[in-house]
Length: 129
Image 1 (cartoon, helix red, strand yellow):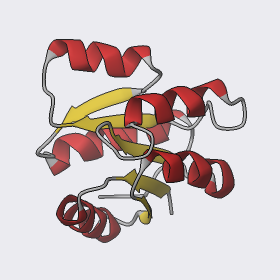
Image 2 (cartoon, rainbow, N blue to C red; image 1 turned 135 degrees about the vertical axis):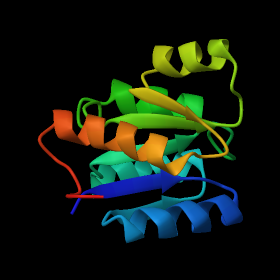
Image 3 (cartoon, one colour; image 1 turned 180 degrees about the horizontal axis):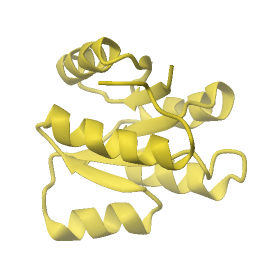
Image 4 (tube, one colour; image 1 turned 180 degrees about the vertical axis):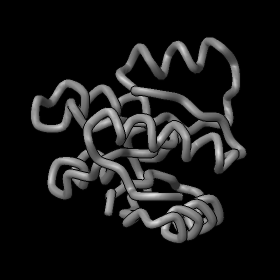
């Protein structure tokens, strides 16, 4: 079972997305801010991180930079999740090291496709969805 760290400060978004991912067979870990995201990624080693970019403590941009700069966590795929749907936001997310980008509100089938692509490229995966 693939483990996903969901980094989201909005309780409603966190609850909805974590339940939907659990039903698809993923084990979901939760971080409510960027600082916790960095420390949990270092200790828990999830298979993938879903990173909200607008976070307290450390924003998702900086948290991603830190994770990708650390050789121990650099290989963990990160998908940026943001309500900002501008092309420049997608480019910025990729520049700081995100492996993919998805806009909110989350379209679950589209997001699952991105998750499975990134996990599949590492030989992981969550089975059928």
